Length: 122
Image (cartoon, rainbow, N blue to C red; front, side, top):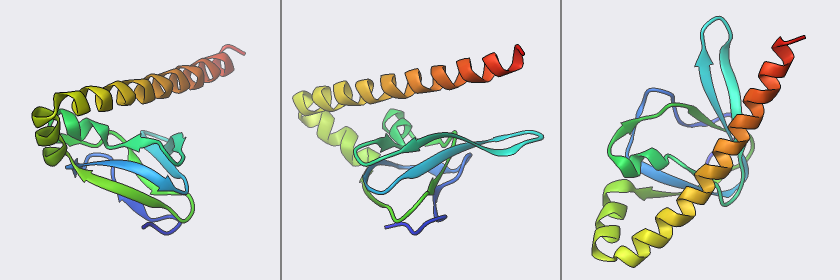
């Protein structure tokens, strides 16, 4: 459980868990020189974060902060990788769903980039 303003993880920190938002919203932001923290996405129930931990122990590229009262489910990535290796059908289904979630996130990022670039053309 997280209270509003509480940080789940910070940009640059090591992360060993995959998280699923169960309740509330989490804001993802990145540090930009001359601007500080810039929000890039808000996650809602059902959204996944920390997914890069499944690919190996990685440093976080964003800071995740509770926008309101939040509950997340945390899954140790090492354990998930073992489950997926033992039960490939589960791993395949999970990764398929994760790919869809990441595709949606990529499209959202592309839309934000288009808006940002449109604003610089004026």
